Length: 227
Image 1 (cartoon, helix red, strand yellow):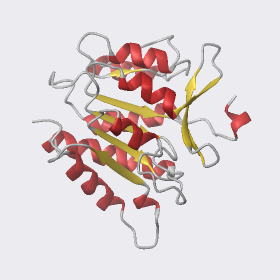
Image 2 (cartoon, one colour):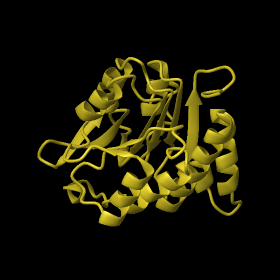
Image 3 (tube, helix red, strand yellow):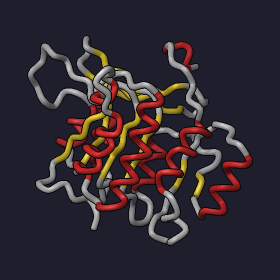
Image 4 (tube, helix red, strand yellow):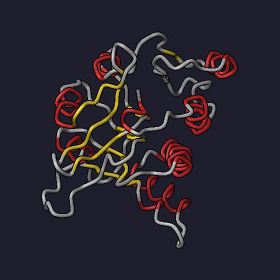
């Protein structure tokens, strides 16, 4: 029921193919484990065969609810990165951010930032990085001087080392390019702020402002996530 919220469905096949392209052959080299949660979305057989060849796990038949994501994050040794691809919305009236998850009935389940932060903040061990490929996940009210308004700053305050988020509505092409380049650089050297700067530089266009929408929040001194 995305139309109820004036939102368009995403091309999930294209988005996952873009993400897997950024990860390259690291899974084949046993350097990376990836689990995909497509929810109730019906995916192409060609893409699923590609996952199997490259050794990716797929959580089939499980809705992408906050509870199921949390359950997966706490499974075994946990995950170093949570990449969320979906819709977000900032409410200036309530001064809060909401993410759109998938409910048990396949309909939209709107989760406010305080509820999400409370649940993700209790995960042990926490992800090193949360990448929110969703609009307005770093949006702030210019009339409010509190630096911890918005989902991304709240996650960092709760203890997540690094969070990538969007300050405004982000064009799909911009988000795809950022995702592809950011992970490529991060997996080369492991320094999250350097990877973000490199990815944003490739987006930079003096005639456009969309390159400035993605931002990084972090609570580390040197930005090194991985060795």
